[in-house]
Image 1 (cartoon, rainbow over the protein chains, first blue to last red):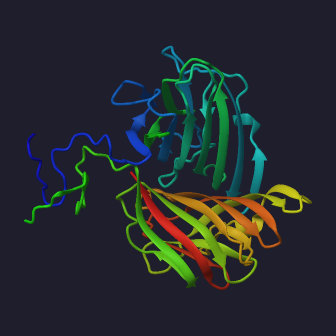
Image 2 (image 1 turned 120 degrees about the vertical axis):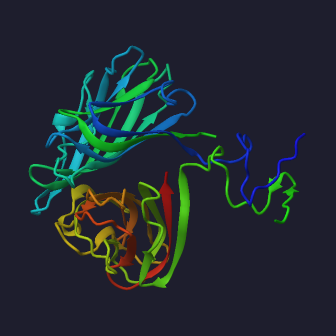
Image 3 (image 1 turned 90 degrees about the vertical axis):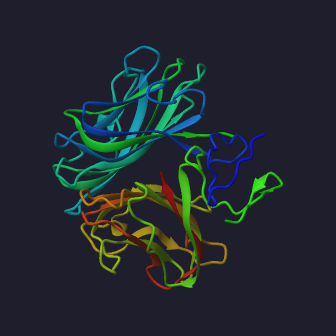
Length: 206
Length: 200
């Protein structure tokens, strides 16, 4: 066996560490929007893993800035075909607070889905002023199951227009399919994703 | 250079791993323990290294009964006074089962204010009472966008209720946020642990 020597207190030439603990949360893929109509994470494409490797997947979206004012950031899921049209039922509620000091906590019927193949809104109306954007996270549970529906939960926060407000946004639901979910696609309800970072993580169960 | 040797199949004195070996996406940057502390401040390590920072706070016990754990953000000066607009709502349940509620709380949000944001309200100071939760701060180094944050706190309300508290907002500044400070609105943080993580 060749002798592997230490290199200034780091370890060089190591390519695998099967018995080392590497943390339960692994960054799989990061994508940066730049006037993008869609940002897609497709299992098996561009180093994306979205299969039975992990039981839980986490998307984080950071500083998502729309090209068009007052539009929704949204997601859809692919369940076997080439289309992002998995049937979904979901619930949404939100708290908002205007900079002018009006506030509310309420269910948001306009953003939920009932057995719909349409997109799921994961923010409300993000403004497109230069400093406006949205951030948040989406958890997708066991997308590779061919037995159960596929649950997801979302929490996001954004700087909204036209009323100028902050919104704390909650969505949850399930893809009502037993086919595996093997891809997710993000977009705006109108216009492009002008800029923003979307990351996909895998969460280990052992 | 001294030769380091393997130690019973572990490796001693190693301070860095090669890029091929992942250390995980979440890195513990700092831990602070409160002990009759007027403030707990994180003054370094919040920069463009990570685009998300997570604070975990647990067993936060106030010295004064019925006081609030709160947070302020530093946006370039020495003061933790970044302008914020925020939301605050909570679910509550009395230990005697006599009341439950879910409602927005207008006295705990901020509208373009430089005051501190409440993360836990009316925390009890009985020996066993405290609050725990997490605060996520997105991309604090941006000099283009406002800085969003979300938080959730589980709290022992001083009148023997549990409260599940949800907070979100933005620092309405384009200057980078480079420091975060926790405090009670009155009295000290008698005890508690605060941890800062970077998410790669």
